[in-house]
Amino acid sequence: MKAIVFHRYGPPDVLALQDVPVPRPVAGEIRIRVHASTVNRTDTATLRAHPFFARAMTGLLRPKMQTLGMDFAGVVDELGDGVLEFQPGDRVFGLSPDRFGAHAEYLCLPANGAIARIPEGTDFDAAVVCEGAWYANSTTGLLEAGDTCLIYGASGAIGTAAVQLARQRGAVVTAVVGSRHLELAATLGADRIVNYEAEDFTSIGETFDLVFDAVGKTSWRACRPLLKTSGIYAATDLGPYWSNILLSTWSGLSGSGRVRIPFPDDAPGFVRHLAGLMADRKFSGVFDRSYPLDDIVAAFRYVETGQKTGIVVINIP
Ligand SMILES: NC(=O)c1ccc[n+]([C@@H]2O[C@H](COP(=O)([O-])OP(=O)(O)OC[C@H]3O[C@@H](n4cnc5c(N)ncnc54)[C@H](OP(=O)(O)O)[C@@H]3O)[C@@H](O)[C@H]2O)c1
Image 1 (tube, rainbow, N blue to C red):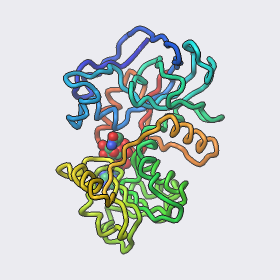
Image 2: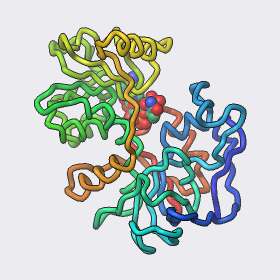
Image 3: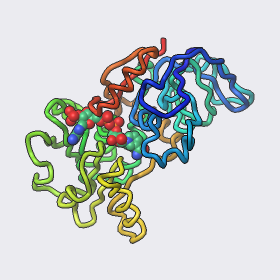
Image 4: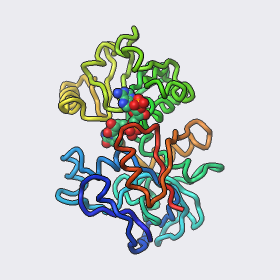
């Protein structure tokens, strides 16, 4: 099969399209013929082993996994022994957060993993929606109905999902985006939209139960005036000088819990939840552009600009 392979950490040029053996599902696994995947910020960070300490999980000197790709959508084509959850021919989508491997024609995963059937009427390339939404959900899960939240960077994969998931939880959402994404934020259902290029979002005269930096471009210090007395600041990134790591550690130790870097968990449960929202038309991905598998280096380069809108799709016809 064709797969995108890398044997050392580095820039997108270390990726190569190669012929590798088609994997066989072992007991409890299914094999999926992958039709669509994505290049996301987890892929780009893993490719470069950034931050450095991530090597503890991905391989100290060289990558443990040779093929990236967390998001997948495709068709079940072979079952390992004992699999009852799926049948060959099922159209499925989901996440491969531990093994990656979706930048390839075939992928084997545990049948009880983060896999769900693609809702009726959804194409493969509209079903690769999980990575940003999974990260977003770990923060929007802090919200109760009626809470107010501000989502900074509501145009990225995490931000676009966060607006939708926060609305699903009954929160009142203020989305902060640049000029070119004002219309998008309205489409996603934001109650208030602030253009960070036209005004200082920290001086909008409102306070929030949750301020979520979904794009790693602000800080606890800048956002503090926006928080209610017991309000929470959450971020997806390390922050300036790793301040988010230090502050979230201190905030955990002191019991205040006011600064957090929420880590996503329960990928299987989340993918099934997302499938339900998609089937009910309560969640849909925001897609920027698509690349064929053999042009994946260009996709990585584009995602690394930090300028994508939502999700970048890889087609594997
Ligand atoms: N914790 C983790 O394990 C983890 C996993 C995945 C991602 N991340 C981090 O999470 C962040 C978001 O990931 P993502 O995939 O959602 O990002 P993304 O899709 O790459 O975000 C790009 C978007 O951010 C907007 N943006 C750029 N500069 C901005 C600024 N100064 N203020 C507000 N918006 C700005 C861009 O539009 P405009 O430039 O037009 O505004 C663009 O639409 C990344 O920083 C990534 O490193 C963390």
